[in-house]
Length: 455
Ligand SMILES: *Cc1c(COP(=O)(O)O)cnc(C)c1O
Image (cartoon, rainbow, N blue to C red; front, top):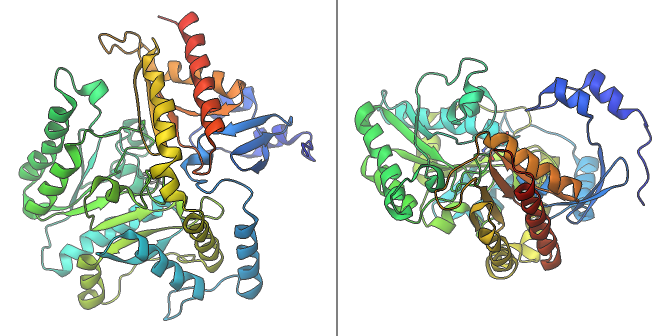
């Protein structure tokens, strides 16, 4: 089965013609690209026939695992019947409409409408405009400012990167755009100092209140956050954080936007992250697990509160994409959700493989190089430390993560590093023995780091 790819010189072609996202191209071209040409279940194979356990589900997205022919067939049937039609001029297509209904059925009682996009980034741009339009229609012309968090990730378009809190992204392209403000993140391990996690959770949540006061409540449209920051390093907030954020948004009358692009569709053992934490967002961007990455599709789930204004009072919303609600992508997403429902994957993460992963993953906390090992469901992080007792971090945290990650990849397990945190986000179908293999491979890489630590 492990056939080599047809082009033996794909690497050279790639170096000559392909610019990769988030990559140092000079370094990548010198090191060579890994070419992935096949996948099945939780496994992927590269150009040399080497097999890897993909404990990162592609890029947080292949929730139902690889090799689902049902999704391919659903897309194929839809392509034959109707490969494309738009949803602009008073038209829709069956899978598009049924997908909106299906998403609403899982999102919670007040979340009943969906605006479709092709990605999470476009979902960021969409809700950003929608939030401002909402307040404008209600006569609050000045309610335009948006508060987000440092180290957040909301995509890579101009609005997405501006909302995100990655300074190194802002430095490329003069971002953020005006009207976006960033407050602290609930990253207790690195920033909590002498406070308990619970105290620290309240403290950073109250930065939202202080920022609203500083800007003036009459000028603030919305606050956006991921239930658990993903790309920022799987920053699991203390239990006190979300209830306080939710209280502040209600008290100050600003929209709460829950970026569910990673946490949605089962990853935390709930359909959506806000359900795990028990708050009700006004807007919820989604993508990734919506189609398990089989085809690109995203959207914004819209609460009745906002939809009533959009439908009842706005008139035309001058916004949308040629491929909003693309029928083939929608058909693939519908089949993906059917699989999640039929195989009980959300319940599996909540009651079975999630608890198993929790125990295995958190056993890494005993390791000398590990400061904390945290997770919710199948989303976990291991914090690497130079000194367990003082929570001291290595001089060059980025290099440390990369060293450990390369070690894992060389030993056949794909994990991601963000700085000095090792991240896991496996397909929801991962087996117990595959969880064991993931954790053991990471443990061995940490042993290796212990013997080869830089200072
Ligand atoms: C990946 C991601 C996005 C952006 O989605 P794209 O499909 O890459 O544009 C937005 N928000 C979060 C939380 C993400 O993880």
